Amino acid sequence: MPKYTLNINKTSYDVEVAAGTSLLWVLREDLGLTGAKYGCGIGQCGACTVHVDKQPIKACLLPIEQFTAGQEITTIEGLSEDGDHPVQKAWIEAQAPQCGYCHSGQIMQAVALLEQNEHPTRDEIKAHMNGNLCRCGTYLRILTAIEMAAKTKAPTF
Image 1 (cartoon, rainbow, N blue to C red):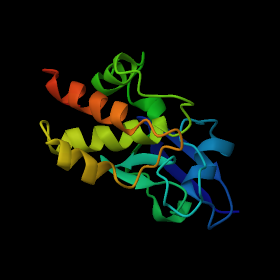
Image 2 (image 1 turned 30 degrees about the vertical axis):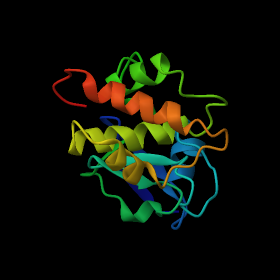
Image 3 (image 1 turned 90 degrees about the vertical axis):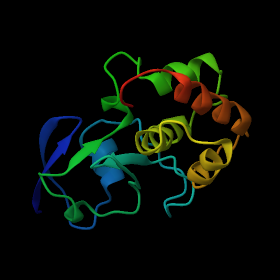
Image 4 (image 1 turned 60 degrees about the horizontal axis):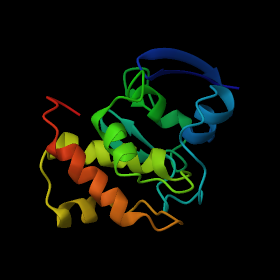
């Protein structure tokens, strides 16, 4: 099997997996980083959202051979050490999760938005979050959490 070196959450990992294995399965099964979830397997739900070079991607869609050691992959586990990222704090304050299954992907998508646009309008939030589904329907609380995070004075997200 081929070997790959990945930079995940500022740590270098060497993995030996079959070509074609998705980044999601490498994260979950080989590295024990289970924050990104398997939802649909076709990139439609967003439960597997992680960042690659600060851009949100659906980890279920991309095979491991598309990633290089120079790329910075960030999962929900690497967002903050103590769950104190402004978006995570807002998520708790707004009581956004119900079952919580989709929320690591939701948070990663929201962080990407706020890194690009620190003060998005509600319509911009809706458009950006459109690819992340919540089976429990907590969309209004998710919107509220993102608006709350945008109001923080954190220098960067």
